[in-house]
Image (cartoon, rainbow, N blue to C red; front, side, top):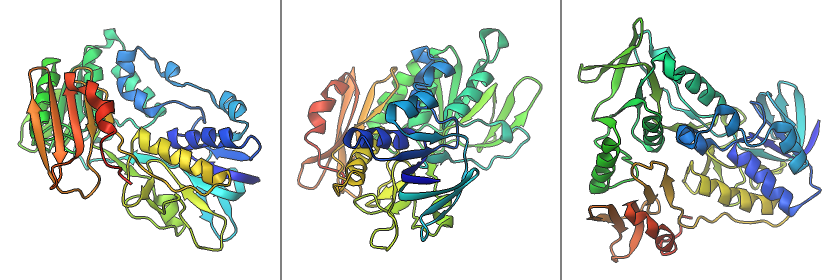
Length: 389
């Protein structure tokens, strides 16, 4: 089988690239290989689907055949890619080999799995795509099932979003994290305390400086033992401690890998080699030392790469891109400073919100965090922040 542009991965990155490329070129051949059903849904919507009143079926925004028709491309679903031969410009899959002129790896990321002891460890759930979420919703069951207690491992962005969503759905929620605060990679100290208080007011219970070591089954629930020896009961255990870029295929194929698949400023993996070009974008990608598993970086990558594939070599640039944390109990927006920035956080805490700025040596703000009522300033402040790349 021969493909002009061959995209491996049907998540936000792969589909966004196809859409952007189709806007620029109505005739270029696009083939997409998907390990799942090949339809399109927005993964960020999984962590607030209960509050939005969305069923698993409703989260699927475009089915495979409709998506293929919209974008005039071929989609091969439920296909595993097993190898890349860069010399022959061929991808080996479970349904045969594909030749390509341009190969794009949009492989995403996989959940980090804790090494837990106990006979309930294998029952710990993670949610990273729609099938995972369907399993999670089945585990939650209906109102008559009596499953009301959910333990979440990880108080980062995804853990806190799920905690807020589950509380909205009437579940008891306890969140465990070895860090001393929520959103430890995003918020400074006082902003984190404000966030925690608002979430606790909504009914979320946090256990900081606390990790789970054992998960044991009992007749009707799970017993969790933490690193302090204390026990906790839960009906469902959800792990949300983070993601790791999916790099195994690239590494096995001899492509450069660090944290993510290493690309240059044009998102090309094999630049300068006498081979058909290979690119990468999305959660699996590392560019300029940055691996940014967020929507705005993915969209910037998709737009830049589409221009390159359409014939105009385009370098990727990242403007400052605020991260919106979907926790209605405490609206939160964070614009981290560029990687490697030196400075300190300056925080203004009010009764209804927090304004925090990461300030460099020249007293200029390099990043910000806005909580509560202060989030209305997001757009104006973002325009003042330095570019990330």
